[in-house]
Each structure stands twice: as structure tokens, then as C-alpha cells.
Image (cartoon, rainbow, N blue to C red; front, side):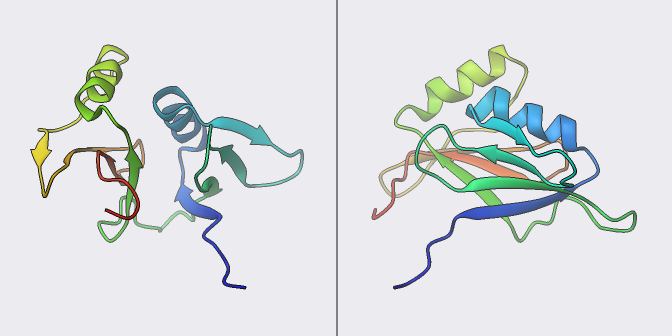
Length: 120
């Protein structure tokens, strides 16, 4: 059996801001376990769990080598709804049969919303 990607750890000094960002804009649900340093954010449907881990003081934030991509059938509508709640995405980009837009989370990580679905 091949293991599946189940979670992504994001190191951040901004645990509460990051939790609010993913809960408010991407409908994740926050789960805290007393005594655990990690904050677990569970996807509202299929998708990886996000684990927020306190970053070490010298750890660089917003690594460009990682981008979290969320799929949506209505990228423009999703971006408009986020803008009404205070999150601005960049320009809508047309690609090979789909559209996407980019933004950053509170720790500077790249985040994208895309009309490209798995298997495309």
C-alpha cells in the first residue's frame, strides 16, 4: 500500500493569525489538543490537514519553494468572496484550460486558488 499525503506542517510564529486565515477563507476547522504545541486545521472536505507548528526564532518565513493550492470550480467568485472579507488575491491568470490566482498567508507562504482539478 502506498502512503497518501495526509498533512502539511507549516512553521509559523503567528499560530492564531494563521489559524484564523485558513479557517476564515478556506473553511478549515481548528482543533487544539491540551498540551500539544501543534494546532491542527482540518479540511471541510477531502484534503490534507494543516498542522501549525511554532517556528524557531531564526526560522525564515514564507519559503518560495512551497505553495498551497486550493481548487475551486469558480475561482473568480471565490476571490471576490475573499476580497469582501479582506483577503486580496492577485490577477486571475489563464493557463491551459483553467484559471488561478495567488496570495500570501500571514506568515508569507504562497497560497493559490485554482480551477485545475486533480488529474487534469
